[in-house]
Amino acid sequence: MASAPEASVEALAAAVDAQVPEAARRYTWALTDPRHFLVPDTSEEIALVAVGAVREDERDGTHSVFRTSPSGAAGAWRRRCAATGPGSAPAEYGLEGGAHLLGRVQDMLDGLRRSGRGPYWSSPDQPLDGSMAKSSSSSTTVPDTVWLGCGRHLGPEPERDVRRNLIALKAAGVIDDFLDLDPIEAARSTDLFPRDNSADAGPSARRLFEARWRVADGVTVRAQLTTYEPESLRVESEGVTWVLAAEAERVWEASWPSPATVFWPDSDQVAWDHERVPGVRLRTTNHLPKDDGELRRLLRGCTRQSWFIHVVVHEAMTPDARGRRPITAFLPPSLRHRVVEHRATPEQALIADFAMKRELGVGLPRGGAVVLSPTPQVPGYDAERFTVRDVFLDGTEPTALLQKIVEFASLPRPLPVDAEQVLTRLRQGWHLLTPDEELVHARAMVTKYAKALEAMTASCDLYREAAESALAALAEATSGNDASRTPTPAAAEQDTSPLKALTKTLALFRSPNR
Image 1 (cartoon, one colour):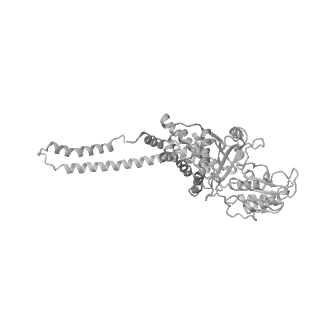
Image 2 (cartoon, rainbow, N blue to C red):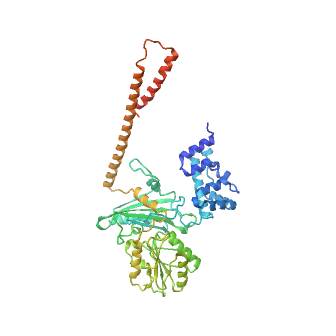
Image 3 (spheres, one colour):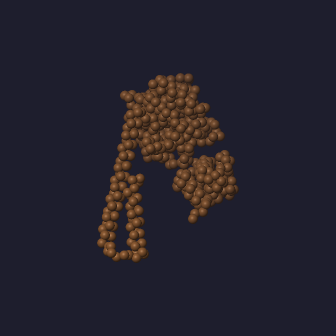
């Protein structure tokens, strides 16, 4: 018989997800109060669990960090424990308390990944939903029917801004309808709407909004916007992260309305347009940092983390008020909020050109502009092809540069990190159905369940036929016995016991309740 600790481990394994309970089975300290298992020397078990959350190709280097600097790793765990509370021991609070503690352990692992050192920690690609990081490369390209965006809202109450804008647009007839959903409820599975893990926006999701509207020729567009808690609750300037995915019934056209201004107010008073890369915004010009190190870090962040298109323009001379107007204002509506414009001052010509060549292999012509490719590079991208030698910043429309931006936007682009999950959630976790769509879905589910019931009935009939055949064969085999011979009690018991056992077993198949 299993001991009490082993039984609790098995109970916890059945109650929480598959990853953390596996650690609980292997490492008993995960089932104890954090005050007891956290030691200054950092046990080998803690190191193994933390390394288990690291990609296989990076485990050797990360494991060495725990071996060479155990005190630093233990300190990170202590700080995380202090921030999340003492936790609870399963022995005191039962199954629910144990599941709660294992959630705390996973939180501490996430915090240790973000604050530690080694090859895993240096990756700029952090998941939006609080889950473990994945590979930054993707073999899937962005579908030509899809519009994607990801940024930060630095103002107060971002959900209120979205809600007010959606209400106003619905009242004006710009959108057909919208939904304001709690992420947990949105991911809940029902008999009529079964959902898998792809519908879960993650533990850090704050709110989920859906909207549906029609564009030219009655083409329907469906879009989802999800807001997320900042990575560090102590840094207010980080703002609230948002991700937006919209899909149309046909190839997306740049002249259609921007999905960003369906959810966010198109006003300079609402700071929803900040990039994930700090210090960068949409809808305005962003001057490059003067420090070479900061400039190179910015270029790396913009090409590796951003979901947007980045353009760098060099000002041959200091422009006037008209020249300071962002060139993105001349772009079509749907493309306007997909492009980030960077400006290099006249004296930054050599510094910006050197940094861009060193980091990206792309030069910046004096008084010109270049469209940057993300990392990994877009297929078909050539720096010379997307470079403009002369850009006049006098308030007139820079036709040549705009053509290069539109041409680059039409190239197939790899899906950014986390975008595949966002797109899957849009397609498979959609809630805002029209009455006709609900009817079609209900009929499809009825058909699906009917086929499943038919298959179960057919299987039950086969079992019934097999049982009847077995009974007939058994009756035929026992019909030739000499009835006049009186069997001994032991023989009678031996003859009748197998028949009774078989009869009881076959009766289960005949029961109408099965």
